[in-house]
Image (cartoon, rainbow, N blue to C red):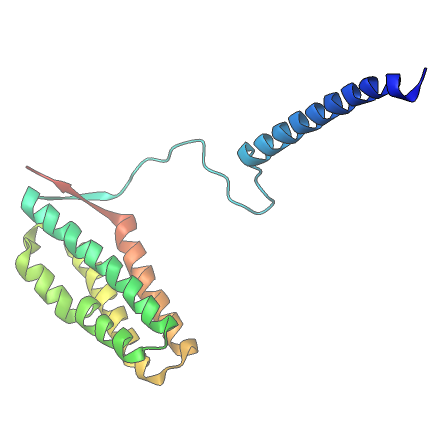
Length: 172
C-alpha cells in the first residue's frame, strides 16, 4: 500500500478523532458549567423549610408602605456609610449615621407612622438600633477602623435582631 492511498484513511481517522475530542470537550465544559459542588465547610441549603416565627405588626396599607420605605432608606444609608468608610470619608459616614440612623431619624419615623401599632419590645429594639448608631457616630472622628468597625457591627446586629423578631403586614 502506497503512502498516497493510505492518506485518505489517515485523514478520516484524524477527522473522527477531532470530532470525538470536540464532543468530549463540549461534554466536559457543559458538566463543568452546570455541576454545583459543595466544598467542605460551606453551608448547604436546608431541604426542610423552617417556619416563620416572627411576630406580625399589622399596619394600614399606607403605613406599611411608609414603614418599608424607612427600612429601605436605612439599608441604603448603611451602604452609603460603608462606602464612605471605604473611601475614608469619615465626615460623610458620621453625618449619614447621625441623620439617617440616629435618634433624629427614629423620632421622625415614629411621628409619621402609627406608633401604637408597634409593640413595646419593637420600640426597645428600634431604640437599641438608634443607640448603636449614635455610638458609631461618636467614634467616627477617631478615623480608627479598629474602633469604628465593632460599632458598625453593633448597628448591623441591631438591624438583624429586629428583622428576626418582627415582620410587617398590611391590614387593609
